[in-house]
Structure formats: structure tokens, C-alpha cells
Image (cartoon, rainbow, N blue to C red; front, side, top):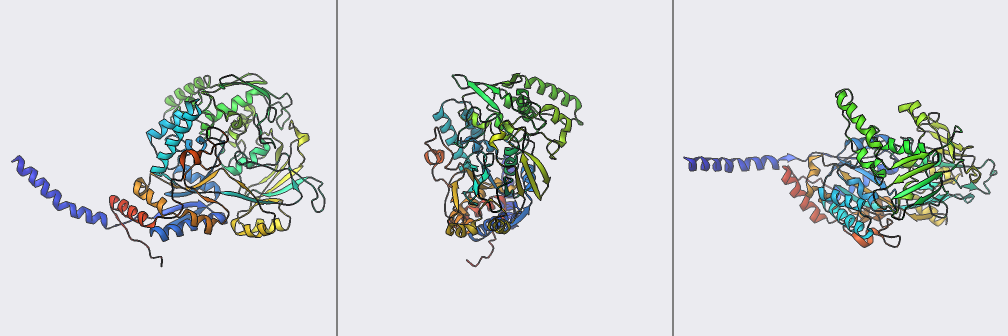
Length: 570
């Protein structure tokens, strides 16, 4: 009897198998929607992605172009299947790119998780051995490039022009792209008085609260109206006295720092900037109730990650649990390695030697916040020019969202004598043609040059170029069943012709990204490129159409979908 039951079961399975297979094979593939920005350049680039995948993989990508702030929100909320995104390195270490993809990273929009990857990045954070750190991150990036939850596309080149009368703009590969503290004009038609610059910001800054800001547009503004303990100087260093710290000492093992705040460091309301303002800001960013996506920038500090990792229940749904979490947060704050000993002395303790720590202090998450002002304006802090305090070279004088912003010289800035500009005018123009026309008419004093206009300024002999520490990539949301399949993800990467995209779509000297970390990020010292020494060319520069299609077919079959390539005429 038992044998008969087994035989009957086997026959049933045999009869059902072709039905299931036929059903799976007959299901059409669900649509793939590409989330991208709504600027003219973003629309063009997303159409380039669409065309390459149509030609090489036979699939039709739908494009959703949205404004800058909406795109950021959709990315953070996981409201996409595929997203065109980029990352500018915040400091000179591979972890600035690799930390993003740990399981609990707030920037892991694709919701990828790999325990081995997390373990390797934890090791890189805790080790004081430079070579051990590099080996750990080498292995981590190789895992990422094998599983491909993101598909690196290209490394951009920075192309820009300046009017001949513009002087003193500081540009850096890593850190703030542009710093106007020392800028001035000499020989402007019509005169240099008052000293000023006209620039295009391109977008309205979405968030000017330094504890929560995440985007480069807001960073550009904050870098001019705020300041940290240090500031990048024209000689490319973060020297003592360059920012709000007059000086500092460092322990022999590189884990203990004592900073002395400048006696003449003031807020825009004339009150002193104190060590307490730094302690308050850093702990506010780490407080899980703040929901800062950049809080991990502080995780080099003792006790920081432990504070940020505390889970906070919904206040209304679980008031008792919420109150318990708040008590836990307040206790954890006492164990964070940052403390204002007095108004002018800030003590910081790190988990391990972190050679780039001083450079981190110039990053917005490390900027000070005056507690009384923050509590006065609450959630409205930094949403209006009159609802925030400034401690940088400039203050916001005018802010018309999506139209213009004007910064004026800060009379309370400690180094105001070095600031020559009286004001900076920012437009917020999204299209590519208008800024070019304005620059040619000397209505803009400097601008980034779109690819189509590079030959024009190259021929005129005024095009300037410099490398960048940025990688652009496709995010593949693993909540989408399609991209849970590794073969589908691999097929997308193989089908993408990076060289064609750079040469025919971007046309701006960008280079195909054959790994995630760009070559401009260094390894164990400033003479070593991490990508070149430890990673190499892992991803294809040109498309492997045959292998891509085969993998894509296999992936679709495993998911129960049929492959129906669109006709391209190629």
C-alpha cells in the first residue's frame, strides 16, 4: 500500500510538471521602471540606459523622471525597481563607497544583505593595520561585484569653465567640490565692486539641517554657511587653525583627540560657538529618533554605532516601549566618545586609529548645532533662512525655493578678513542650454560643462578638467522579484555597454566603471589607487550581448517568465 501511494504521488507530480512549466513559461515579464531625475541631462542619460538595454538585451525599460527631492525620497523608501544613482566619495578611503552596502546602511536602497560582506566591513572599521583593512575591503568589493545588487556604469570627469576674471575658487577631488571662501574677481567688465559671483546651483537644496542632510546640492550651500573643526585650505590640507578649532592634540595610538575651539568663533547671532555645540550636534545625528542617514560617518567614534542602533518603537502604538527606548538612548549618549570638557575644549575618542578622521571633521554631519536654536525652531530648523544659525564665511540672505538663493558675507565669521566676496548669487536652472547661454553672456561666472558643449570650450581654449571621486551606477531593488535573481542582475551588467554610454551618450571624458570604487580613492597610502591595486577591471567595458541574453533567459525561466525580446532593427 505504501509503495502504491508513493507511485501515485510520483505520477501526479509527473502529470503536473509540464502544466506548471507551461504556465511559468507563458507568463509575460513584468515591466521594469527606471527612476531618474528630471533635469535635461538626467533625461538624456536615462534614455541612453534605455536604448542600450533595448538593443543588447531586448527589453523595454520604462522611465520615470522626477524632481531631485522626489527622487531622493523614492530611493530612500525603496519605491523603484531600477534607479540611476551616483555617489561622491566623502573621504579618501574605500569604505566611503563600500559602507553604503552593508545590511543596515541607510543608503542601502536596494536592500541587499550579505553576512560575509558585513563581517569584512566590520573588520575594516576595527582594524588599525592598513594592509589588513585593504585586504578586507578588497574581498568585500569582490563579493559586491559578483552579486551585483548595483551595476557600476561610469566614473565621471569634471569639466568646467571660469570667466577670465574669476580667481581663487578652491576645487577638490574629495570633499566639497567647490569652496568660494577665498574666491574673488579681478577685471570683471563693469567693475569688481561689489565683489560677487553668479553661479547655477541647478536644484533647490532639499535639506540644510547638517544632522540630516544627504545630497550634494545641500552640501554645496552648507559648506559656505557652516564650518566644522577644520576646513580644506588652498594648499590641499586640513591644517590646525583652518576651521573652528584653534588647535588639537592626538594620542600616540591615534584614538584620542583634544580640540581647542577658537575664542573668536561665533554664530551669526553673535554668540560664541562652543564645544557643547559640537557634542550636541554629533549626538543629535546619532540619536535614532533623528533618523540621520549619514550617522554612520560618526561610527569611527566610540559608542556611536551602539547609540544609533537602538530601536525606537512607535510612540503612539507602544508608549511604554518608546519611553524605555528614550531612557536607553540617554544612557547610551553618555558612552559616546565625544565630550565638551568646557566651552572651548572638545575631547573625542575613536574605536581605532583612523588616518582620515581629521578630514571627516569638515563634513556637514560634523558641523556644530546650537542646542537652544535647534530646540526653539524644532522640525522647522533650517527650512527657512531665518530659522537657522550660521558659523561659516557666508549667511543665507535670500532663498526663493526652486528659483534663486543669495549668500552674503558673514560679519561674525572668525576669518572674515580672508573673505573677499560680498555676496554669491545662485540660480536653480535644470536645463543644460540656459546656463551655457548665460555663461557666454557673462551672466554666470563659472559652470560645469555638459558633454555636448565640451568641443566648443575646448576649441576656445578655456575648458578646464580634473578627476572626480564619483561612481554612477544602476540600483537594482532586491524587493523586486525580478532582481532577486542573480542571473538577471548579471545579465543587466553584461548587456550594458559602458564604453558606448561614455562615448556616445555622456561625451564628457567619463570612463567606464569596471569596479565600484573609483581609481581616485587611495589605498593604504596616497601613492596607491585602491581600484588599480586591489580590484582591477572586473566589469566589462563593452557589452557581451550573447552571454547577457543567455543569462537573462535562464533567469526569466527560473522565475516563470518567458523571454519576448523587443524588435530593435539591429
